[in-house]
Image (tube, rainbow, N blue to C red; front, side):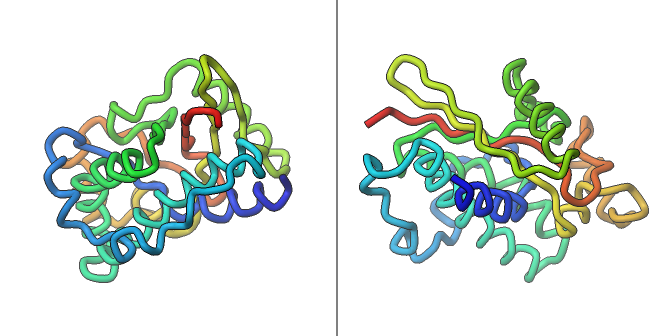
Length: 211
């Protein structure tokens, strides 16, 4: 479990931009580069030998790899502006595509959404607060797991890093004025700013059938 936690913390800091405008951009998923169209996705087998936490983590990391790969390409080609466009237009379709591929339910939620669709529900808000307390105490958080109706639900914290602050940090300190202007246009109800490094920005929620 300790190794799982360390991997979770490292990877979940990598991609924290919101998944937005789901219905408008469903058609773009076929145009976005995925890791050699799935051959680089880790094999999803032998789950009877691993814990639910490891199984859920693998689903999340598969999706994270696809999102992170495309995010970095957007940043390399168009800077922070490209990252905003990617998150606004393409993150939701990619997440949906990976969920269908892996036959699971995947979502990212937060207490401070950029897009209102990412607002955490009551139970998720409690988990976010718990993870915040754990991180504030400089402890490593274990994934939270629950079972219901033959399904398993696993939560992993999403932590901020220095790259995240370009879009989620403090205005005019971490977030450039040009970026801030674009954020206000794309996300008029934006609450996802003001973060520092290594703070809980939200959760990965992964739901799958028990095997």
